[in-house]
Length: 79
Image 1 (cartoon, helix red, strand yellow):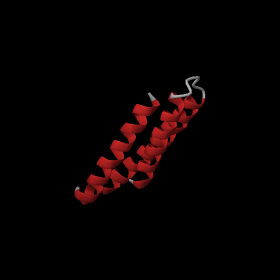
Image 2 (cartoon, rainbow, N blue to C red):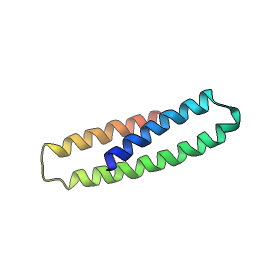
Image 3 (tube, one colour):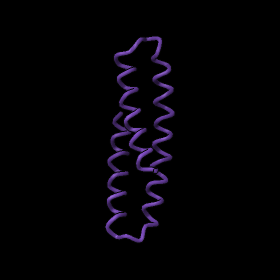
């Protein structure tokens, strides 16, 4: 669940960037607020994702989750 949530937050940030860039100036503050909230949700999802990955007993699965978290973290910082 945390991985799917983090992906959804990243996708939401991308959409909000489009709204902020191409949308009505009346929606700019709404897009900014949405971005703040999506960033906060992304940070929380990544905390859970990394915490859950650290508890996995499967030595092959944990690195995949950590790598996914790193990619999503970088994506979120870029948006």
